[in-house]
Image (cartoon, rainbow, N blue to C red; front, side, top):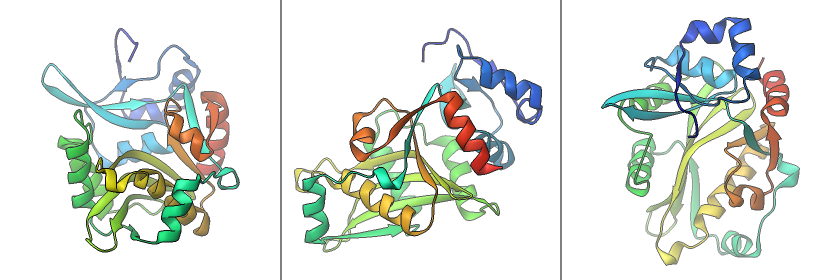
Length: 233
């Protein structure tokens, strides 16, 4: 984060049209802060284009909604599959599953990430949303298993809104025997999303090269919101 301070926001700020427009148009600020971990607020943030993580400040735990400066978006016609992943697909030594074991997925995420933000009240919120989906919002646990050992090798947590999917956080085994399985999981997820008539995949921050290797394109905040808000509303 490059900001010197964080603005506190609440659900009224997001519901108030003029305030939300001001947030969208402030190109100097992307991160905000809130102590509201309610389902209603989280879904409202997601539907208005924020991707929320979390942060500790002075030993207090906060939601950290971000209206990003730029986004990485994958349209499935642009999906690129490299030779190593094609080979793994042909070997067929995996099981790709949705929502089999979110608790195991969250556990693996925590083990993988040294500074895991999907924890504490945020984790509780995600599990609550997973168990109690809204009529057009639901949490997805994406899981890739070794077919023989049944071990969870790669996965991610994200959410579905209408016909869009947004990634939150993922992991992949560091074992050399499972090299490129993280990329395999992403390709299989793209297959799943396209097969189930999703419009596009929001991969969030565009600062990781693997997203563009997959076929994602860069969207400015303005261009993203034009597409996102049309799709969500």
